[in-house]
Image (cartoon, rainbow over all chains, first blue to last red; front, side, top):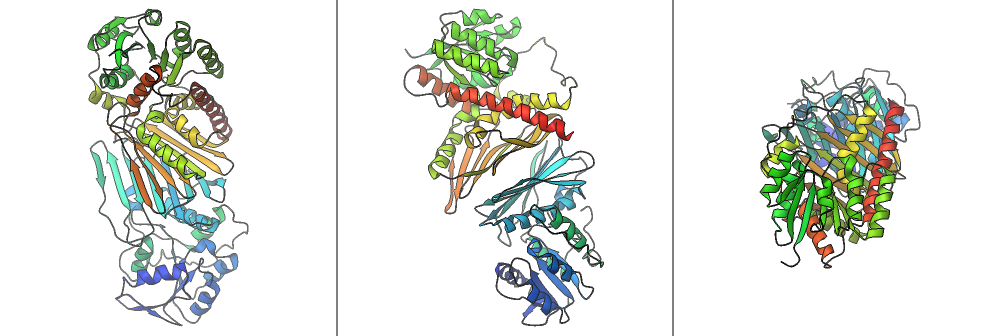
Length: 277
Length: 342
């Protein structure tokens, strides 16, 4: 394993989170000031331009968090052949999604997140993460429409060509959480992430006529999975700039037409997608 | 024992056998079942025999019997209104009618008018409204003064027969087993699932989401289920149901506020597994409420207390009629939404 240097600008919430996570991968990453192999570009921390300037001094990878907070110009700057882009979402293409892959199509599928102390931008980010997760579980939706756009609740309805429709929602709440229900006649799944703590595992329960079974817990969130994958430990499902542009455009409140990424920026080429995702 | 009141059942099917009779058996000092009516004489006699009652095949034999204080209407939905009204006119102290109370607004209005005229107490068997866990959670929520942001009702259930086998031993019947419902257009199916399944949680939803508002999404889910999304201003309600599934039940109700979250996890209604388990969370932590009685037991207990002057009804007839109107508004708007998006 090659030790990579990581540079993080500022001390916003995303910076603090990623520093804490990187501290759990000491053989893979070392924090440095200034130029580095990897630069964190956070939409939420408000210093994305400074981070991109730093990345332009020779970084090979930009690690993007809270991308829905980025403006169109910043998203355009991300699309640069000089670096690879790794987009990390709160529960993006999380490992638990593999458990939800099932031959029997769902009769009901529902995603519901609460976000603590959330402004509307935090709710948008939570929806973006669900869009990415939904793509892993259900594939590309045929249609996305906004059902509710209020200061405390955002709701999207996605539909498949088959007519199946499912909802993604983000609610202002007491703490960070995500619940997913996948209901088919023969099998029902319930996923619960009870908080935003980095190592809080998703509880993935599968219900059948035999009763219930709970998957072995994985004590890491998607950010750590992504950092680990960047270091060659494990795999994550691909999430490309094109997907990001598509998903941001689908979010309630997106007013500007986002540029279509011109390059082939994708993490898919670097990390093989997990089978069955 | 002087306060022991008598009940006559209209309908001797699974709800009577597996829900009401076991619940009443836990409070024999308050209630005695005097008659069980069913159109199938074998069922009527067998069910009645189990509880020391008389089996009859005519509703009139129950309604006109002056020794019966309370009529329990457990017949098919289309008979509810006429039987409730007849029981009121016959001078009964009370009627406990399974949900829905009626199938039209006009019937609801007639019931309200007649009950006011005769002074008959009427309760609807929306058991979760009476569930002690839910009511404790509701009280805790009300005390917070928080504003409702969203409501979520989920009813994911296996076939009822799985639970009735735990609750009783069905009376053998010569009737052929119920097959799948005949094919029907999705709007008709959606109406049936709202009045057959969503109706269970209408009073709970309405306690936090008083008007149907706009139905922004509505879908019938085969076999017996739905998904519906309602919005009234910034407030929303998300209703989901599916049955029968080949898995354990999940019957939940949740309310999200600005600073609090109420969640209730209900056991299946056919078994006396106690109340729903309610929790209310705020930034300081979570409190929980769970009790040994289920909603049906609590409802029969409340009805007895009402009739003996010991308590007020936990829900008024006006509320029950408003629940019916909410359910019918939901039917109309959900069907319109379904047809518009088909």
